[in-house]
Length: 634
Image (tube, rainbow, N blue to C red; front, side, top):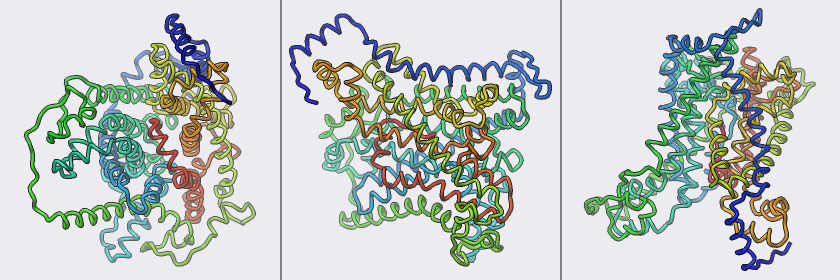
């Protein structure tokens, strides 16, 4: 299609539109589907959950009794609640700070040019792309007391006297789960910071180097101020992810030993689905939702890069003052005393030591990211007897594909019921993931266009913020009303029910990603197409969608990963193999607790991580673009 532009006509039409001040009907129609759907699948369930929190129910008589704020009073008077709140705050503080520090180091390394950078970037993304259920299975076996991988390594090194039941001590178990959360979330932090680093002008550091600034000084005076907007967003995302942690806890400790790892999300689950105290469970989860929103507001007030009257360290290098002004934001600059480096190490030796330190850091990052995954693959190829031998060892007696045969071949003679469910569950995850991704990205593309082009208007900006706030709502807050409502509507144990539930978390994600993608397309392209005779819909379909195709692919990848890895909705809303997804089947292995299940369990876990790992390796470019769009996999 050839587009001709007549500047006079374009100017006249633009001036007329601004004079009239009318918003095209198409703009409202573009966001109408997503508004209607989110009200139906998020707004109404939230109101129903609020209604639950104001009532008590008898699971036998099914009678409802209105108690007003009685459930909240009972929650706040409970010692279990305050203990769980303390653990939640501690767990979130450790996991968020660890993920940000480690993610920053990884991003700084990946921002440098070196041989194998592409491979390392793909390897780093693997822990983030893996399903939390698979991560829980892997690390619970690493920390297992009698025959875990960590104790096996200690015995192989002759340090068996250090072996212990790593998850047997409550405080240590909470910290080990936080470490597992860091392993899972640090790649997301590094991905988003890397996108910020790659957008930073190179002349900032070149000018600072000419003034004699070392790498540490440049990091705190240039790099860190530049990354503050990204760090602000990352801190909110990491905090919400930590507050909502459920899958890893369910697999690794289930709140134990005792109640040592019972955080608010797990406490709400216990009250709702174990003790059937729906009112108290809903009240606890609403408190968790309020905590998420409160922390987001506090971060915004304290960390927001747009706050007035903040003092940001200016570079001490007089020649770069004007260059650094965009980074430190005009009047927020303050002067520091002139600084000159003292020569302590010969420059040639400093460069040599720097290269050595960089190589060691890159190697440690590779081992940190890859070794646990390699260990999972290795134990999936080990005979069942090797997995329970004492003393444990990392070295298998032989390698075998028997575990894969038992989960992939229906006539393999496997005695494991769960193993026979793996092929169907893989197909369920694949089909649901494809449908959910296509539907949500199609709707998100429409909405993203409306939010991008008309986001300055109050209605559109308010609607967008309302969508984003839904990402701060713990999934447990929604799954409880979903379970009750779907049961009455006959949607329990159906693919349609899962698609609806998954869309509650994917529609805001896809809309935000596509909104950011459209922001990078000049609006003059829209105007030229309309002048050429296109309707707004044909303009979007024929002109803009081909331009934003990379963003659409990135959104499809993120939506598929979230759908493939989702565990909570699938666990609560499915009950038979015909609809169960692969994370639910993997979790089912743990309920049987028979030694011959371990081999098929690890084989199924490896099969479950193959699609995410393949995506991390072959589509890393689109994942980086998704990070630029502010995408979040919760």
